[in-house]
Length: 524
Image 1 (tube, one colour):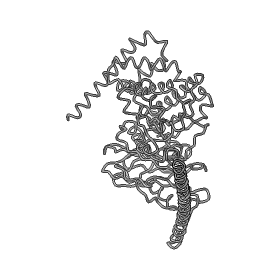
Image 2: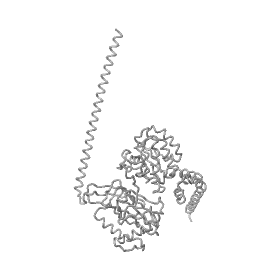
Image 3: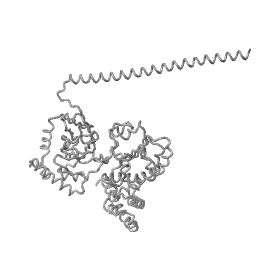
Image 4: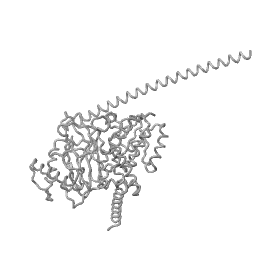
């Protein structure tokens, strides 16, 4: 056994030992005396969820005594806030409508953005509890789905006045990440902080501690793109995100599994692998019945209804009516085309489907799946499959049931290498995605773009050149008009300068005349 494997095995054993010790001691030293102060659902979860305990241990550097204190404080808070029972109905509607706190978009590292628009917060002791519940509602909602993936807090201080400064509320937000949701803070991006708040944030730094202070990123419009790309920044931050907050429904652009052509498919979010396999088998039987396909794959897996060649042939027949994308994103496992945007035609254009082409550039089989922020809206075929070394797979994306494509919709392509001995049927893929480490998964995001006016592929070079020349002429006219306006502005400035010089000269002459007259008066 190699040294690396030995170390990994030792760390795993040590981690399991620490988790077991935390469970045993928390039950004996805390639950026995404070059972009325904890929600029984949290106590039960602690006995079953290793990752939850591990997050507290990691935050406390594997010191069990400190971890137990942290769990005690966190559990008491969870019961006081009734975190497990928080729903939309628990929050006043006006707080949800105002758009001061919500989840939307991703930073450059792929972490979810948790927006706190401070200008919408007015210090008021009557509403502070509801605002704290809103923070807890969003964090708990996110934590239950992502189970450990951190968020980036976007603390937007633009247009903020003194009446928005509420240090109690800021302290609560910090405690959420220090105690109640450990390991969930990737960084806190503080945008456009007024100078008047410098003293306040010196106090905030003392609350955070030295480790967390390094997670504070003070930014302005000039450097915020170091952390978040323009596609997820609003215009007032220099971005191009067309998103405008509104409620209802809840803002929720988390990537989920879309529909395949024969209905929902299983994903790693299902409750158990047994249910996943049963669901996959049911979908498979439906596929065989609906499409009258009885050909078994080469590997003899009865869970897979058709061979990849048959599947690709079917996809190819569907894609003959429109062009394949040209731009390519070159990832370490897959080359993905298009690179950034899926182009959907408008209702009038007639080209309602889009194509994603995946090319495996490794020497192993690559499992892939496609997720979207609007799973109920799109059909994707295939949405969860694999690609052989050097092979390509065409994925058809089409709006379901005549639903409208939105520029805010996003797609996520996930890919990971499989062992040569691994099977590629639905059951094997489901289990693979449950077990593959997150750092082994390649992710690439695609935006949606709606083409309003569609031009046929028979467009000639002459027509193209004419369009380009028209566009160029328009650009030149626009630049010329700007130049004329700039010239006029310069002329006005010159005229002002001349008038100022004339006034200065007149004042100088007047002063000299006064001095000469005064001199003659003094000397008779």
